[in-house]
Structure formats: C-alpha cells, structure tokens
Image 1 (spheres, helix red, strand yellow):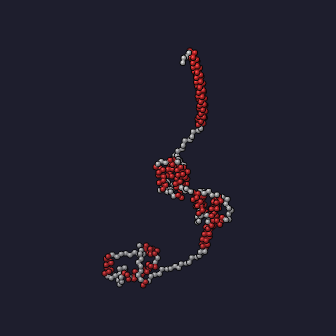
Image 2 (cartoon, one colour):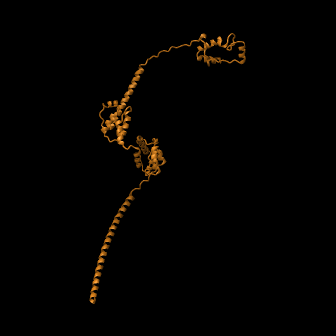
Image 3 (cartoon, helix red, strand yellow):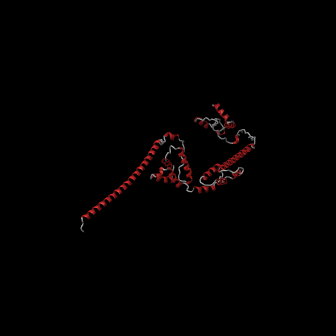
Length: 352
C-alpha cells in the first residue's frame, strides 16, 4: 500500500489527538487519587487530634488525684499489740471437724490482721495446722509451687471440696430430724440446732416446729402456758427460759428435802458409858511387855554371874525365886497397868 503525504499527515494528527486524550485521562485519574489520599490523611489527623485530647484529659485527672497510700507493712510493735490466742487442734481430715477448724482459723486471722496480712501467709499458716491425710494432700501443692499458694480464696474452695461436706443441706436436714435435747440443757440443744439450721433453706415455721419437737417433755409442757412465738429466735428464748425454771425448781426441791431431813434428826445424842481401868489380877496370866513405860538398867556381867551362882532373882536380887516369879515385879506391873500414860510420863520425869 502506498502512503501519500496527506495520509501521513492525517495519521500524525490522529496520534496527537489520542495522546492528548490519554494525558487528560491520566491527569484526571491522578487528581482523583490525590483527592482520596488527602481525605484519608485528614480523617487520620482528626482521629489523632481526638486521641490527643483524651490523653490530655487523662493526664490531667491523674495529676489532680492524690497519690495512693503506701502499703503498710506489719511491724513488731503492731504484732505485739495483737491478742494472744491459742492455736486450734491440728486438722487430720475428719469430715465433721472441718467446719469448726475453718471457723477457728478465720477467727485467728481476723484477730491477727498484721501477722497474716497476705494470701501467701494465710495459706502457709493453714498448712502448718494440717496432719496425716491433709498434710499429704498439701505436700504436692507446696512442692510444685502451685498458684493456690498465692490465692487464699481459691485454696479454701479446693480445701472444702476435698475435705468438706459436699451436700451440707441434706446432711443437716437429716441431723435436724434426729436431734433431741435429751438430758442436756436447752442452751446446748439450741446452739447445735442453730448451727445445723444455717445449712438448710427451711422457713421460720418449719424451724420452730422441728425445734419444739426435739425438746424434752417437761419443757414442752411448760411451753403450753406461753404464747406462740413469732420468730425462731423467740422460740429458742422461751425454751431456754422454761428449761432454766425447771432446773431452778428441781434445786429448790432438793434444798427443801435436805432441810426436812436435818430438822427430823434427834436433838440429843445417846450417852456413852465411861469405863474405868481395872487392875489385872496376878492369877490372870502373864502380862504383856510394856514398852516405853519404865526404863530398866541392864546388869553388868559380874552382877549377872553372881546372881546366877547364888540362885538370886535377876530382877531385884532377892533369894528364893527367879525373875519371872518375882512378886515385886508383878505388883509393879499391876500398878503401871492402872496408871495413865500421862502419870507414867510425869513419874519418869521425876525419877530422872
């Protein structure tokens, strides 16, 4: 195909027009994109400004607030001012002792707030009061540095799950139905009833009826003379008052019966006949040896040999009899049997 100069000119003009159109289109696209970018930048700037305002307000509030008080660490003086309390009995895992053990531990912590001031100290204090089964349960917690050592509430929840009563309501309800006053006082019966009543969801009327059914017969009879109680506390007060009155009446009866027995006793005592000592006759037999009444002087060997050689009495040295048949000795012993010990003692003193 042959191209003329006119054709080439037309092509050139067309290409110039197409180029101008493309340049216009590209310029329009660039302008629109720049407008979009500018809008985004303005939005981001506004957002930053808003955040800056919020941060300034927060900083201002923090500056105006007073500084938090520094934590007060316990001192020896604070611990010394706390009351002295005996520690509870060590817990061995017995289920019915769990409640009283936990109550005593919590009471000690309340009375000694400076000594047991954080969760770690409280958990460690309970750990020192565990023995046997409970100590074996606590050992892995301590050895593995369990998070329970730093969280007292979580530790107590786990402790109750393992060693506490899992069904308090049913257990307490069964115990309430079987509870009786018996020979105990109404105060002891009421305290045990109150402790069990805390775990059940019974109403006031049900608690009053169950409480009265467990009372002793004489207390129930005396309660018939009083008005019906309006609350469970009033029912307990009436029962205790009646039980105390019955006890006082029983003591009054004992005092009256003792007074009657004392008044009915004889006023004069029977006379006891007085006896006088009687001398022992010589023919009565041998007289027992008197000890510490008279003092005998022992004979020398020469005197004893002379009296035996001459057949003399070894007691007084008289002839014609031996010592066991000495008449003077028998008379002296008879007189000593009649004399009182005081007279004999005075006589011995005078002889000395």
